[in-house]
Image (cartoon, rainbow, N blue to C red; front, side):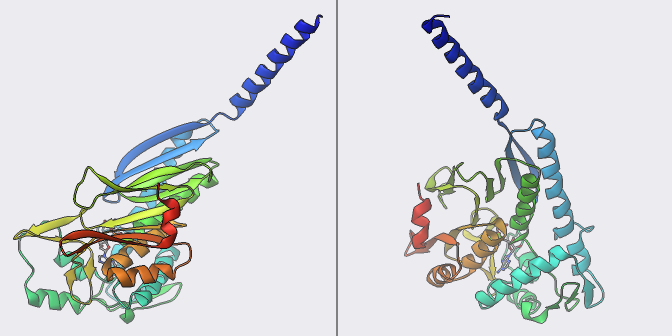
Length: 328
Ligand code: ADP
Ligand code: MG
């Protein structure tokens, strides 16, 4: 063979090796959405294995299973049995125990403003109301709220039978974390789960994603963009679920100390290593004064936040120093 022929052969071999390498390392991505947990849930998975569609199905099944156990409204759920038990002493699962431990921590950190026994007030200020609840109903509901009246151990919860628990502020985060862990355990390279603004991005940390924070009053505008990988980001907003009475907007995050929906905070976006933490922190900060909320998040390792709030008719923001690193 001539020198030229050797050279051509070498190039051909290199191209073949490269093609085989690419074939073995090829990645399949699938993204699907489903209405679950009262919102639109998007699951996106990328894997070198075929059959990613089946994996998306089983990831949705993990979410459905947790939802059926932790739902406040489903009368087959564990939470429903706990809330409707006739005795004060109730057996609980490991998941409920885990959530109670976190709920307790944030009840303490917020001096009682984050409280998962908020349900009588949430039920009172339900969506679709056209009138204000009468003051005596607010007082009566408020009297049934107070996490410090619960006692619990890994197996049992002791709760006065007239009280109840609503994990609406944390369950979505907890559930998408479990679903992300499941997908990773099945060998996916990377992916994300977005449950109506509760987002968990997992796997390969070199795959960054752009996440827009919605302008609190202009639905089609993005007010800030974050560049994130292998982390979680959750936004609590006053624009997601609300109703108006005489032109005043009331929404679904309630200050248990006043009995009224929080006024003056538009949205709180929190970045944390997992969605459970980001979810509980975003609701906690929402109920606090913006300055004290920023002080609280500064004391939590690996958590960052941006808060948009109303000040003198203007939209103002407060943020942690560390969030700059994620702003795009
Ligand atoms: P979203 O459900 O819109 O994503 P959040 O995670 O902030 O928003 O949770 C809001 C839910 O938290 C409410 O629908 C209600 O069930 C519950 N909640 C409302 N106020 C409080 C509070 N002060 N402490 C704990 N949970 C609350
Ligand atoms: Mg939350």
